[in-house]
Length: 388
Ligand SMILES: *Cc1c(COP(=O)(O)O)cnc(C)c1O
Picture 1: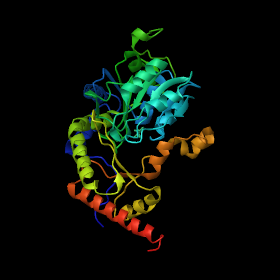
Picture 2: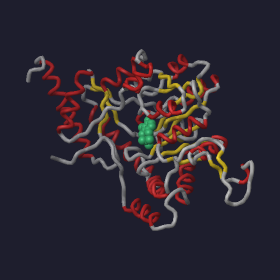
Picture 3: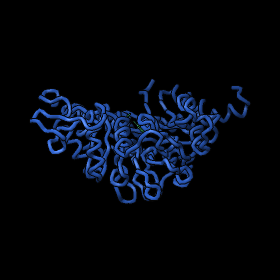
Picture 4: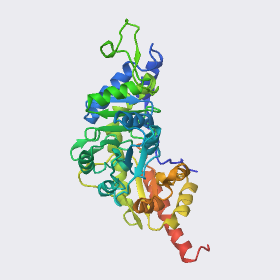
């Protein structure tokens, strides 16, 4: 069989490998000069004053919610069409995720649905830039400022995206990225929060290092150069220099990666136009980071057969995502009656096609051909009442 195509994967070169080896040969393996350099470069690239890296996107979300002051009983309004971590990180702090429905074209949080879910307890609004398409950030910021809430943008899909001439990272109160291997760039595991607010940046740095400070100016009792004081209950969420070196080396290629993803997405757009399915929607004022290319089949009943047919051809399409509140854990926590009809409709018909910089034009043809054949044979199966 031909090469198996995952829906996404990392793109590494000799420079990435050399960067990691260099750290392994140095004195400092964990948080050191590579973390500082990675943070400086991330802040530059995202147009934010501060970048604080973490050991995953999930721990970065936890840190951002903590810095936003989220506590027991507070509510976080977010989208159900996301990776569970967006909501889980609120649960870590005893807060309550509240799911608002999405827009049918971009599959991003619908500002009107957010407005309808506001309450006295709303502390954070957490839009997700689904698939790499920035959410309606101006509208959401406006709603948040009226409600006195903090906007934590989950941009784990959207490093390198732009919204109305502004880079993602320069817009929300805090913006969260992930460097998992399927994302735009990778550090193996890793994440970051970027912000323009020095108070948030300071909280984030404390939170990722046990809540311990070594800054004499901040200490209640400075005894000497050995002094360290714990001021809040933090975690060990530090990124190592090994990971940061890889992340920094990858970050230098971000623009190439995004440009290639955009070219591939355009190729899909053209090749899929004749097929009976819905292609991803897009607003004219965004630069899309194209983390995912998701199509919607006409009928939810088609999906299992189309999914199986493509996997049988070595094309590992995926479903992003069933609504978070459908997970058994959430169902058991009282989310059984939650309904977001547009999210559910999308989730029943969606399929993510392979999309990563290492994909070739021939790969795109192969995926489109296999998809066309799967849709065609599915249609014929349907016409004969399921008999083949
Ligand atoms: C990947 C991802 C996360 C979690 O990031 P990790 O680095 O895997 O912890 C959170 N939210 C979204 C939307 C993601 O895609």
